[in-house]
Length: 307
Image 1 (spheres, one colour):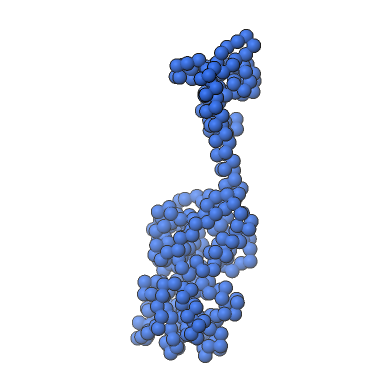
Image 2: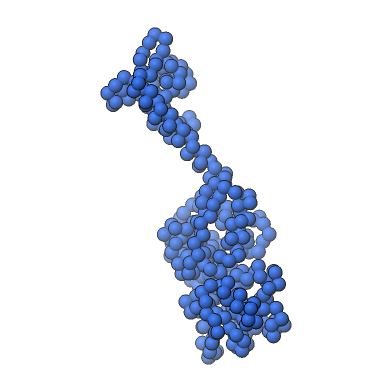
């Protein structure tokens, strides 16, 4: 028996087959069901509706007016069941579906839109919904079921969250080409404070790491620009000749284009932060979301393909 048939009411399915065939005996042959079973189901329908559904003749069965109305209804149900099965099969073959993602701002400017565009080249029927939020809110959206996949920086494990991928995301210095510090192998926070400094706000993971390192050194930070928008910080560095801090992933595309330079930090504790790709613990992702997760992990790791 096909999945489509299993999704339909047995009595209606038997009734519609008799309408199509014009007799119980032919319907029995096509359905591979005993004639008595078909007759019982039709009799049950007629009893519940309180009216005959067929005019029974020697040469076959013809639907009554009530039978024609019910047949139209049964045909709609059959069509809807077929459409539902087709839609589910399309999901399984990555022909359609919606992938919902929650991500922090650092990944929203380049990595996520680039990954979505690449994925849709192979799977044009798949759509994306991307929610950009504070890092602390990413895990919450995954936990609440608002997002299939979460992408954020993390300093500690989150409850009810499965980490599908984790990689180190050390804080690095961001410089414009030709900057006075560009020739250094490593750059310290003390050196950065001598130049116009743009930083994210105090509640962000990267700023917390920087502030802890500064506290250990009794080093005062006086940024000339504070913003929770990564693109604002990076553009400021480009336009002003100043400096900032970030992760390599956040600026990878600008470094590749020769627009910015990345330098490792010489200070201790700059590697306390990880990038996490998160899903809800115990939840099985749909095929489109699972394939998207695999591509995202590949792009985070800097691989040229999904493997």
